[in-house]
Image (cartoon, rainbow, N blue to C red):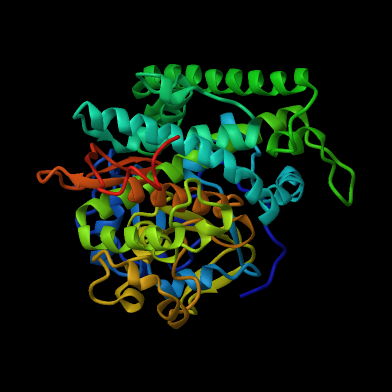
Length: 488
């Protein structure tokens, strides 16, 4: 196919028939209906799980159509690896991600590829995730984790179960707020979620809901939801503006992410982030920096509680590596290799960012089979990629942290594990999230026996991100919890 110059972003939704010349070769679900498309058996509340079900039936590439909008999905490892070629493909900002642009604008997560602020912000903020910077965040991560421990100790003493997703959300919001922006939301002192969390969940839910409603009907069907979303976005903006004003009034912080946004110029061009872009980046980090990590921790805790032999093995590693250290150091967290495998396996089965879009930089052929025009795009279903039996085996649905021991990782092809996206636009904070989550799992394993509700069956809540729904655990006290893991 002819090589052409790279496309700039296409505004609005671009249906698959505009970019895939041989779309008819890609399977779609049976029973497609005129006008409405492939909606039979689908639920607007579970579009990710619906797509996973269809992908299992239809194969590594398939398409879905609803109300005139057609999308190509990829779930196979070979095609996903081809899409990881940065010379031919780039990030596609579409669907729910594009619906977040009214509040996040050209922030790192929602910027179009042609928007210059993405590269500027990335270059300015990347040093904030260096090894040295991460070591500086570690004490604050410990401080917030100890607030969680104190809260869980109170719940255990009262004989109550703990609401895992809610408490992980409190933990991760406080962690990114304190380490990145010097702000304390006081989440653990509140009986209900902080209004920032409620507004954030509202905007994410609306962004996904907007995808499932036909454009002509949206003003009517989503009138009330749109008003609520406008209020949620206004609250997010007001909250962040207050954080920025407080920092500017104080004369500066201690070199955290907000200081970098406000004070650091690009090392080559001398350009600085505009006040509007600072707001968008802060919102991006507060939302993306805690929502996905809280989900990852929640899924990991579910699997640890459901697999006591795994929990015992992970706990033994924590005891061996951390010993009698009351507050583990930064380097000690990286040595929890089995705990990290537990986290990775939870992210494999339920990547909290369940898909990412890729678009063709030029006319090309995907996998040597499917022609794509410049600007054509597809959605890589990470949760299907992570279950491809060609890579993960016939038991790909089974929880097994040993899939991530060093030998197994080396034996797998590249681009088969993508919980943080791919390429230049992959999550800038992935090492921050992994360190935080490993630390927290280590602290919780050392302190508690995690006991599930025998009647609980994993249910998945979808709001662009994924989260276990209704997950509560009962906390048993470890015999040794009065020494190394005790709060001070």
